[in-house]
Image 1 (cartoon, chains in turn blue, purple):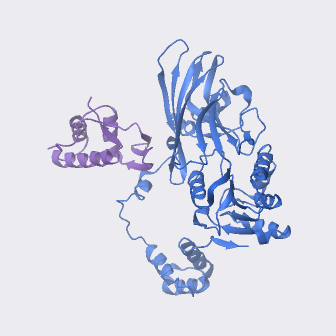
Image 2: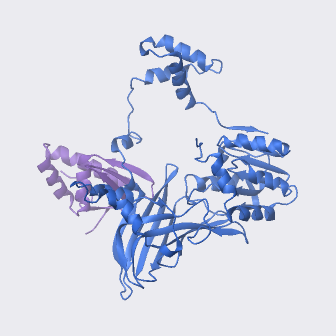
Image 3: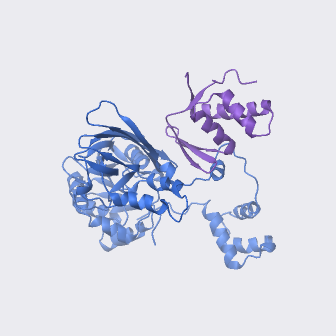
Length: 392
Length: 95
């Protein structure tokens, strides 16, 4: 079972042995910690960096994690005699106020890309509120890089299921596959250009969660291009960092590909221009990549494709309209039940008492005791604080 | 009668993306970071704008397709276009 962050404990274990990621973080943390300093371990998981910070001489650590894995961190802290020097906070850092600003802020709450969920807003808030002016951040800079990718299997996988099968026209489905960033293993021999930096994220200054960059990728040899390989390189401090580039040791973040809508044949020296945008919407990212081709011997570029992760999903406009500011909700059959349940929340009744009252009030629903309790838990759980807690 | 302050010709903002399934469309404005859903009629208007048609041509096409009076259709269409303009999904063009 995975948890709220999508990681299970085994995944955290994978991160701890992912090299050179782990040793780079350890070395950067060791260099940043001064005797008695305060450290924030943001997204602490089972707490390894909190424990190491104390080993390196920190006086106190605030370990923050919305996920229940923080309970394991607390247990491990006790086991190692460190619990009295760590404040554990189960919740989002945006809801946390430390006893004192930190000297060091450490985090790795990326996904396979640094532009992932609410990573950037979380870091921007933590830098402003939780870290003292001039404090040390780990990591400092991530750089997203791209290169031309030749991988016929990618195109085959995305087009094959929908191409001319069974005498049916299924081709409108192809764009759903070619419009998403695909996580996949990429070997260096599949890269048909030198890598290029396309988006740089400086965690010491970043505020805007949106990002955009351009790159011109020059084919090093004639090849059919199926997409763009994309990954990020991390700089943790002045000397420590690591690369996720194909050909480097495989790390937990993996590689990804941005497919082209159709494969494109390039001659050596041809350029493929890409304009990449990451737009933060509803705590997630829409990726948009616009490509153009420029033959080696010509000054002008020709537009190729405009692709977006928006086009990878079937979005129901009716469901979307229900989220609009002009939408007027109408009372459905369940509203009276939900409203009744919420009105029972008074700080004294137990959920079992509420379930019993629900069955008495709405006998026609025919709820069993278990079903009534589940309904109460479901409704109350959305409306009452449950996860934020600080404990030592 | 058409809205006198509504530009006669509009175009999709370069910051607007679309995805279409069947006869319905979802738009995303990359700067506003907001989604917009278009019903089948809205999708027809959107397609007309993408094709470079002016408002009069789009209105005539809709009148041919739907049983509606010109005044009602024009008012509804202009309200729809004004909404997309207000959200920067559409921008005026001088072409």
